[in-house]
Image (cartoon, rainbow, N blue to C red):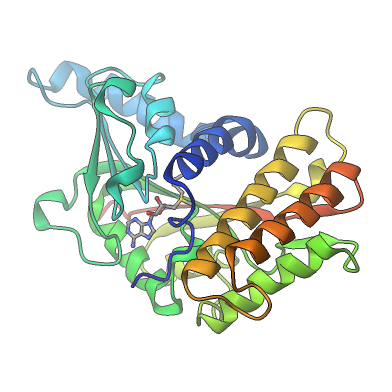
Length: 298
Ligand SMILES: C[S@@+](CC[C@H](N)C(=O)[O-])C[C@H]1O[C@@H](n2cnc3c(N)ncnc32)[C@H](O)[C@@H]1O
């Protein structure tokens, strides 16, 4: 069984969570952009350069989204690219894919396990490879394997953009609240499942450099920085709450952990957290790391 714990809540709830998060939390929190400006400029330059030289039907630019979920990130990106752009989303769980009629025709969603090597026909195909929120699915050795697999997908000079949260800063404040205790319990479960032992996504830039990527760098976007923000404070707290709920359901499905054994335990802890968050008695924190790197030109 996969270690990924967030595919166990009600399917419609998880779909709604991913779609809502994209528009209300992830894009606004990460500098209000779907792709960082330098990557957008790179894609737009490629489109200009290639459009004249390309034969009919050839895509002017190609993007892959790994662990795509519903495909919402690709669907959003599609609006800033020509309809001939190749936009491929990969996930090992196809149940959350947006149906064909709710995505542009050039957004293809396909099954793939990103920990396994990608087929040779996909090697060197993409100008941008994007990954977001895979932290809970990865065991320590998977990060290096994934970094290497993603590099095979890229064209020389192509960008990797990997956005993920670390488990170290996933906490509630003050520590005496029930919410903080539940968040700490989720992190202990992570450790118990063997998912700690590597700092990533903190220092993911160093792993990228070691894997032969160029120009690797990263930036943290902190939920605590927007605790008082007029429009982001509430959505970010709601978002962390939905992660707590979904994660607890995953733990129950795995057979339970400590005093979190049944659906009723998860519902009780969720209600306690909701009451504290709504009353403003606790503030939840998390750091989103955006790591950018490039495949060397030669
Ligand atoms: C938290 S969701 C994020 C979805 C999407 N990236 C987003 O930001 O909206 C993580 C997704 O990664 C997928 N996933 C986890 N491990 C994977 C793997 N080894 N290969 C492909 N997809 C994976 C899960 O099925 C899930 O859809």
